[in-house]
Amino acid sequence: MYDVHLTRGVVDVAPQRGRGAPLDRDAVLAEAVALADERGLGAVSMRALSARLSVVPMALYKHVADREDLIGGMIDTVVRTYPAPSDDHWRPRVRSRVLAARDAQARHPWMRDAVDEARRPTLTVLAYMDAVAADFIEHGFTVDLTHYAMHVLGHRIWGYTTEAFPGPPAGVADPEAVAALAERFPHVAAIAADTAIRNPAGACDEQYEFEFALDLLLDAFTRLQQAGWVSASPV
Amino acid sequence: MYDVHLTRGVVDVAPQRGRGAPLDRDAVLAEAVALADERGLGAVSMRALSARLSVVPMALYKHVADREDLIGGMIDTVVRTYPAPSDDHWRPRVRSRVLAARDAQARHPWMRDAVDEARRPTLTVLAYMDAVAADFIEHGFTVDLTHYAMHVLGHRIWGYTTEAFPGPPAGVADPEAVAALAERFPHVAAIAADTAIRNPAGACDEQYEFEFALDLLLDAFTRLQQAGWVSASPV
DNA sequence: ACCTGAACACCGTTCAAGT
DNA sequence: ACCTGAACACCGTTCAAGT
Image 1 (cartoon, helix red, strand yellow):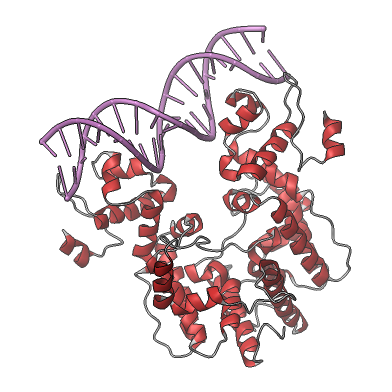
Image 2 (cartoon, rainbow over the protein chains, first blue to last red):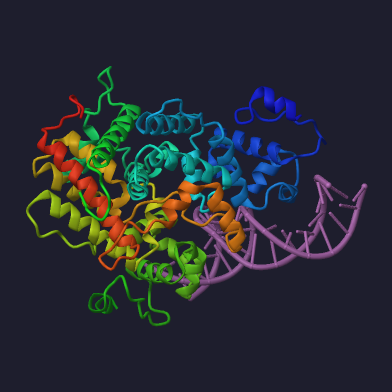
């Protein structure tokens, strides 16, 4: 069974478990990832997951400590697929890490919810954060500039920018209501209508916008680094 | 009863509802805020809240549509306490808004969880976002630069920076385990140990760090604005 | 108009028992 | 060693009934 995982890819394929074959942690996590890919993180309850594995809910607790451990394990299976950067300079290294995380996010949209919900870093998560920090520190950044840089990058190192209130306001089905909202909140409406964030094809593109904001931040870090920035002598 | 609210402050004081006095929306929201202040947002269930109001759970549904509406209403009561900025220039205006939101966050720590959990903006939330956008747009920013600025500010306009994995890793009670982690993840450990983010007293200070990161971003926006930045001609 | 009672369809997790 | 059964202490929300 483990061979099936290795050859088919742990993350993207539900395990072909024979009826009655014993569960193990990888099988539980792979099924949880498959369930989340299909129906979102909200659908991944201990009970729903156990049903998909044709097992009673309590059977899962032999393989994961609790729900927090389950979510942590799911995050780990994705983080382990992040490729190591091949560049030497901190800028392309960090850039490629962030964009790789974003690629993984696109394949597993529940990663956003999972990272938001998780409270404790696993060893795999710590290793990734250490690698990002190392890209700065081992390539000329002071520890405190690295500290700032990681704070300012925020969730971008996990492949997304957390947006407050991502959904539409209530009652947006009615076109008249939308027009009324646009009149009442003209600046927000202008930003929502803004197509200035362009990809080469000219249309508004979230990926392009993400990369653009990332490059803006990397440029700011470059300037601070070149200015020999330390926190005791502010910008 | 409404007078009690006005004179005592809607947000910070639980309503002194006489037994049998009829509920209204403000009373429900005020009690929800009081409960969240005491025990966190997780403790604000429809059932727990109704118990505190000496009422059956279903009674709440006459005053709030559902749990989402309840959380939205709680957020609104806090957002309405944000003072309007008194400056003319966009920079001190935005800066004072962000720091005012942070003050409110300190009084109501559950705001973080509430904003993270909320999916649809209320009218009050839209009005606040419109005001922040107006500070940029009406003071010389293009719409698309404003768009970027708000993306990069992220949750700071709600008074905090969302930190991924805010808790300690598992098994941090044991000092030996901590030492082993520090050895295994030296860059993360260096940042955690970093006291370079200083307040004037010399100690590590989250407020000071927050303001510093904010000023870093505002400086970046200033440079972009002065460079006549538009997205068609990238930095 | 406002609140109640009973029910529905869920949760995560415990304990002791089975095989 | 691994899974099961029954139970505990919760959720949000519905419907129809009470006052």
